Structures are given as C-alpha cells and as structure tokens.
Amino acid sequence: MKKKAIVCRCEDISLEDVEKAIDEGYTDIEELRKKLRIGMGPCQGRVCIQLVMKILEKKTGKEVGKINLPSSRPPIIPVCLGSIASDKNEK
Amino acid sequence: MKSKADVVIIGGGISGCGLAYNLARRGVDVLVFEKNYLTSGATGACGAGIRQQWSTYENAELAIASVKIFEKLSNELGEDIEFRQGGYLVAIHDRKEMKQAIKNVEMQRTLGLQVEILDSEGINDIVPILDVKGMKAIGATFCPTDGHANPFKTTFAYANAAKRFGANIYTHTKVTSIKKDKKRITGVITDKGSVKTEIVVNAAGIWSKDIAEIVGVNTPNIPIRKEIIATERFKPMFEAMVISFKDGIYFSQQKEGQIIGGIPSPEQKPGYKTIPTISFMQHMASTLIRYAPVLKHINLLRHWTGFYDVTPDSRPILGETKNLKGFIHCHGFSGHGFMISPMVSKLLSDFIVDGKTSEVLNNLNIDRFKDKKIEHEMSTVG
Ligand SMILES: Cc1cc2nc3c(=O)[nH]c(=O)nc-3n(C[C@H](O)[C@H](O)[C@H](O)COP(=O)(O)OP(=O)(O)OC[C@H]3O[C@@H](n4cnc5c(N)ncnc54)[C@H](O)[C@@H]3O)c2cc1C
Image 1 (cartoon, each protein chain N blue to C red):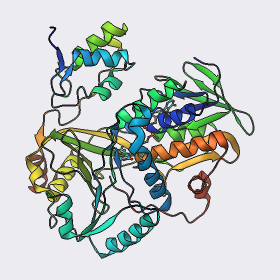
Image 2: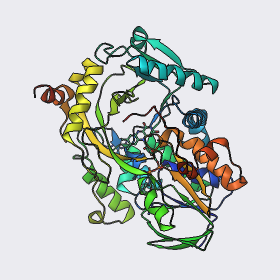
Image 3: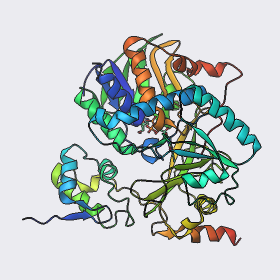
Image 4: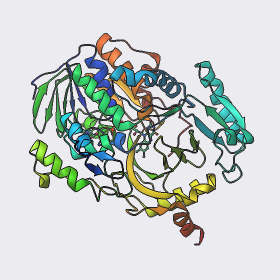
C-alpha cells in the first residue's frame, strides 16, 4: 500500500488532496490555499507553500516564478493575546 | 472569450458568484469577470458571520430570508459550505441600548424571527467564558438561528454550480471600460477582449465606485479598511458569535476551534491601504480579554485587513439605475454583504429575468440618497 504523503502538516493536507483540488479547477495558488486552508495554520505556509507551488507547476505547466506568493500575516510567529494586551496596559 | 452574453457581472466575490448561479440556473447566459481570483476582495477577508438581528427592516428581511436559503444551500449547490447555527449574542450595555434593543426585537419578531432578551445571568448560560462585569453588560439579545458559513467554500460552491448551469467565469480578467449609447448599456471591455451585452451588474465591492464612474454614475460609497484576527485552535468552548454595538467588537469560535474577531481600529481611515496596525492588535487583544479573560492564554496566529464598502446608511445599493437601462447596482454592503447574499442574488435575478421588483429592492435603490432623510442602520460592528 502506498503511504500518504502529507504536504501541509498544520492542516493535515495530503499530496492527493492537493492534486484533486487542482484537477477540480483550483489552479490559482490563492484559490487552492483558500479551498484547502494551506498556509493558514501556525506555520503560515513556511513549510508547505513551496511544495504546493511545485505541485502546481508540475500539474498545470504554469511557471512557479510567475505565480505570486500568498502573503504571510502578522504576527508571523504566534503570540499570546495576554502579552499583546499587556503592552497596552503598562503604558 | 465569448463575444456576447445576456448578462455580464463585474466581480467574483460572494455577490457576483451568487448572482451568476441564480441567473444561470434560470437559463440566462451569464458571464463573470474577476480581475484577480475568486474571493480576492472583501469576501476572502471577511468574518462570514450570519446575523438576522438588524435595526432596519430591509437588512433584517434580507438576512432572515437568506438564512432560510443558507439552511439548504449545501444541498442545493452539492458542496458543503460549512453553515452552522450557533446564534448571535448581542451585548446590551446601558438603558439607551436596552431601549433600542427592545425596539429592534419587536420589529424582528414581526418578521417571524425567534429572538429573546436576556438578563446579565442569561449571558453566561449561552457563553460561559464571558465576564459579564468586565464587558459591562446589563443584558443581551440572542437569536439561536444566527450563525456562520465558510466564505471561500460558499463562493466556490456558487461558482461551481453556476458553471454547471453554463455560466462562464473569467478570473484574472479586468473590466477596463463599459460601452453604452445614450440610454442603455451595450457592452463591456476587459484587458483580454470585449463582449456585447445589454445588462451589466456592478458587483465590484470597494471598486464599484470606479465602475459606476465609467458610465457617469455617482455612488456615495466609501472604502474603509478593517482589521481582523484569527487565533490558534483550541477545544470548543462556545458556539455563539458575541458582538457589541457600543464597543464594536465581534468574535466567535469556529468549528475547527480558532477564534475569529474584529473591532474598529483606532487608526481607521478611508482609503485603500492594506497594512495591519499594531494599535488594532493591542485594542483587539485587550478588549477580547476584558470580555473573556481566559483567552489571555490563547495565541494569536494571523491578523489581516479587508475593506467595508460603506454607504451613508450602512445598507446596500441594489437594482437598476433609472436613466441608464441595464446598469445594475449590487454593492455598498458595508460590513454585512456575505450574510445577505443568498437573498440579494435571488431578488436581483428575479428582477433581471422577470422584471419583478419588491419592496426591499425599491427601498434600496440608489435614488434614496436624493432624499434628505435616510433611515440609518444602527446595528453595526467591526
Ligand atoms: C474584516 C471584515 C469582516 C467582515 N465580516 C463580515 C461578516 O461577519 N458577515 C458578513 O456578512 N459580511 C462581513 N463582511 C463584509 C463582506 O465581506 C462583504 O460585504 C462581502 O464580501 C461583499 O462581497 P462582494 O462580492 O460584493 O464584494 P467583494 O468580495 O469585494 O468582490 C468584489 C470583486 O470585484 C473584483 N473587481 C473589482 N474591480 C474589478 C474590475 N474592474 N474588473 C473585474 N473585477 C473587479 C474584485 O477583485 C473583487 O474580487 C466583512 C468584511 C471585512 C473586510
């Protein structure tokens, strides 16, 4: 039996999931991301986005360099709400 | 690209895709142009909360009718849109707000909505983690059938179903001009070619103002930057969306466990800038913790911006322009275009196909701004 290859560990998305979504017509990296939530977990795509771009290039023939990278959102590294709020209170 | 169509829709957000579906299923040859990708506008940035508790009749009516559609939409479209009804708890902070709440609830009940007024203890029965003192609440209204859906999945599901009915959706195609003769629309020009059509729907979100300008129509909309956060996931603790008109905050825990929420940012300005601000993050975090102290241990993961397309009365602009046949408005949704989209797209498709209009459609025509007195929606957040 073939083992499942995980592409996005935050959201538990496999290679199969990505390929299936591309086959369904989600050939835009942003649409793919929004469909599968790739890059929306704690790592914000640092682990998976490059892989997804490669898969997209292979399947669609679109050059990776021509695809815009999705944006990473602040605070980039998870920060607890208490610390963010405390900064304000101490003013 | 096709050279003609019955209807051309500008914008591939929830409004454009919802309308494309409703038209295509009725046999209309419809075409959508989206300059970027589907959900690249406000739809992809939104909280996707679904609330029926409004102060004006039109918003309440549209939301109530939309919930009835949302309840069956996954089935109808053949894809799960993750619609979930955990209710909306609207905090009441003082006697003035209580008076308005009583008035709102009375109106909402005449429309058949199940909604109740809770005292301060009742709040914790619905959302145990709330600190009623900290949030300075004297009560709340609660509607159990309010809820949430996944904005990406809903838009994609509408688009996929529209395509199955023959709609053509062109992404990465920007509308650059609109052709008309004296009194009617004749075509649309994009950066990839042009199409002949007699009907154009302006569903371009905050860019709808520019689209209207092309044909010489002035709209009073203003784009306002909004910020919103998502936390890490944790075990389910509450189902309702908690909101306050006074503090402007809204937050809820999604099915997967993360909290999504927003609040007006201290540096909020009109314009098209999309950079998130530190002051928002601090204001959001401290208000959220004041409402629910246990959340101080939760990590903030992401913080992004989007735009409200705001009208002077916080109600959408819908329907045809009187002196330009075939130019149809579908914008100005302010902070609540997602939740009313099912009914909005149904009403507009009934108008386009059957020429049928309704009280809501008439009341939300752009002509209303010519009158000096417009009724303002009181129940807004974010
Ligand atoms: C932070 C935030 C939170 C929100 N929370 C909620 C909520 O909880 N509940 C709710 O109901 N609503 C909410 N909203 C509001 C909601 O997101 C919007 O009202 C709704 O998504 C509007 O959808 P739309 O399709 O009309 O516009 P948009 O989604 O903005 O779509 C317009 C599209 O038109 C395209 N376009 C523009 N110009 C052109 C052109 N020239 N050619 C081709 N295409 C063009 C754009 O690229 C865009 O994709 C929120 C909004 C924000 C920003």
